[in-house]
Length: 186
Length: 394
Image 1 (cartoon, rainbow over the protein chains, first blue to last red):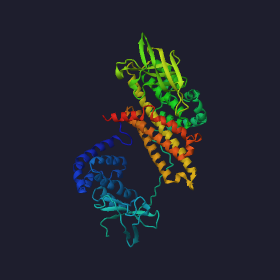
Image 2 (image 1 turned 90 degrees about the vertical axis):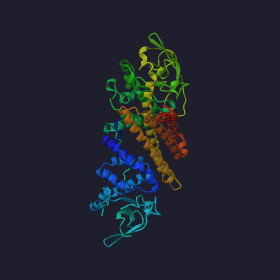
Image 3 (image 1 turned 90 degrees about the horizontal axis):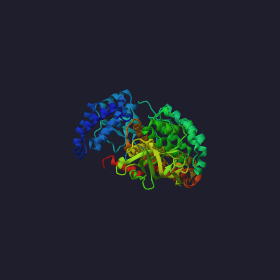
Image 4 (image 1 turned 30 degrees about the vertical axis):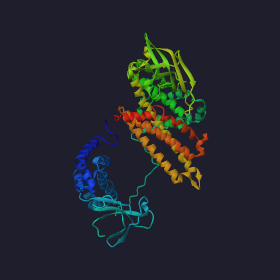
């Protein structure tokens, strides 16, 4: 059978490797991780070793889709969500909108599995109505001072950095995103 | 900081599925122009009278009856996707019965002749069908056998070097206008699925009786026949394909029939959606266009999502079919889903039109009636579900 577009023979070969990894390295731990409410950070390292944390940054979004499909077999939606938050939602904005310096500081170590990312948009009082977020960033000497609260943040406990949407202008559609390290003061 | 990279979607941008090329788009444009100029003006009249036979002659002249048939029989030598383009564009005739009559000819009755026929049969039946000089119909359903194809009783009995056919067929599209019928018969009542044989029977043969024109809920522009066969004698050369292989031949035929029906259903759903979207922008109530109410906006969003999903299923399955696979499960899914979506969409569009939708002048009630057939013809929803379910070993 010819693979259905947009998948190629190469994607199907990758799918076989991804499935093997998921079934052998992740699925046996699914019950234990579900019970613990946690999976080890080493999972990110194992994916990074295989070059799978930056598939789309090499231009192959379809391969990333294959990985997402195969992660569905890991037996734990939370594991798939944690990996997905890192590779599908936290790092792409840095790739797409980041400066060279930001990519070097956050994206590259994220792809190497040395830093774990999270995306922070939702707030206790702003969900579907994204434009209603109240977390603010005020310009100060040497940077910005960010104040506010975010909730329901996947990877939020383990993350080394957050890509977060904050308000820099007045009310309305004036929000912008910034990256900040979770070790930052405050 | 980051360059302000403001991305906005362009919902009006033209787009094309990967199965289609520039040539398909040119074909689409020329068919659309023909349909709007030469067919659509007659839609109202044909609802009353059924559509005229000249449509076959004219489409034959234009090469539209043999888009994917080989050039040696007068076809255009195109790929399977050309048939999808025709099925999609003929919807713009606003005449469901016409679309069905043509589809029966191009995608149901004649493909088995190319697939299973002898050279003589191809010259005698396929070539004039492609030219629009002969009109075809397909005889499967009987008064006592519909979904249960294996229950058909029309008998063909060998008598010397001839066959004698007795029985009846019903709900036969093109049955009154057809020059010949691709007829499913039982030739060996003890052989189970191996007891069926297809025949090519001239409709003017002695003993072929065209009974009443059947009256229907919709598809009024098509003629639908109850046919009787009384001691109809045909030569051995009238056997289409192999004696005893008729059931398998017709199961193959049904795949193309379901595929093209699904494509037409999606295109019909899109057409009535588009028409209703315009209406929702023009019709005002409570101080605003009715489309601006969230309740209406969400109806459109649901319909659009389902239509798009059905279309992708149809195209991807057509791609597999055109590549020589025999994706019976997916064809059944496409036929089932597209038919259901088409009926849901027609019903919601009627609801959005309100009283206007119930009136004949808006054309919505006709679509609503016409599309209802999709959940029955070519295999009911229930048969599709059973084919799909059984494909998983259940």
